[in-house]
Image (cartoon, rainbow, N blue to C red; front, side):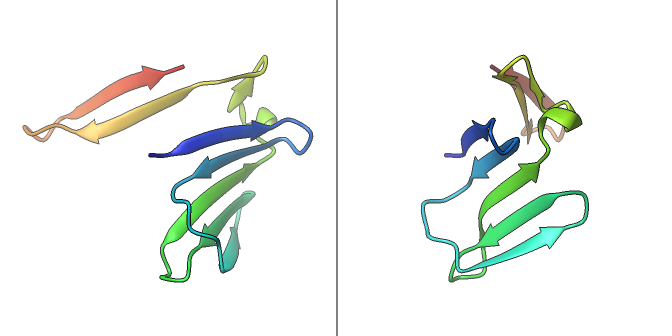
Length: 80
């Protein structure tokens, strides 16, 4: 299960992918930090300056999940 948390003091949107502790991190261009576990798989993704990217509006986080259907089409479901 993915955990989503917004830290307003730092203006960071954090996506927690797993509970494993990170052992390495890579800062990607555009203010994205990916943290990796001991097995080399991502454990979290941080999106810096979340409010200026319009990821946060009026203190609310809006997420849209997209998954492939059995027929090959995309299904989009907004979560609030």
